[in-house]
Image 1: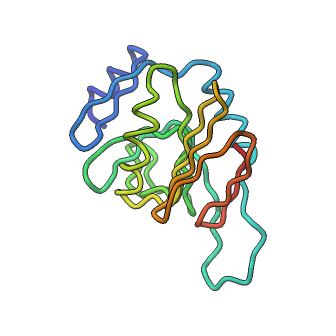
Image 2: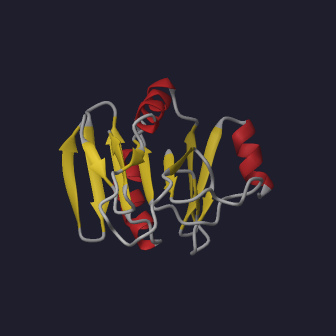
Length: 164
């Protein structure tokens, strides 16, 4: 991992690089962390539906660097993978099946306008953005976007579910 990311972390700043654009923000506050913890407790596999596809293990990781195919480096609030990533000491190179972002005050554009399009363009199948201040939930997929109000159950293409 590049030393500038480690130095930024030491200063209490999150650094992400999206399509060559550096995005800085302070580390999330308690409300943000509470939302992550609450949502992660609800992530599970759907009951098997007789699908020939292998089941997804619904491995969910909070606040980890993911290196995307275009070279971008992001830290989704929650990244969901169908199997345990192999990288342990560097950014994860596997594209998540789903990503959940929690809006931080002052960074709404990053999470609501930049994030969904970017993640979908990199192969993430489901992108959920939750605003804990307004309870607004945006769920974006390649085939469309829905807007809902929390609490809402979300079913991901990979077979995992959660309540936001």
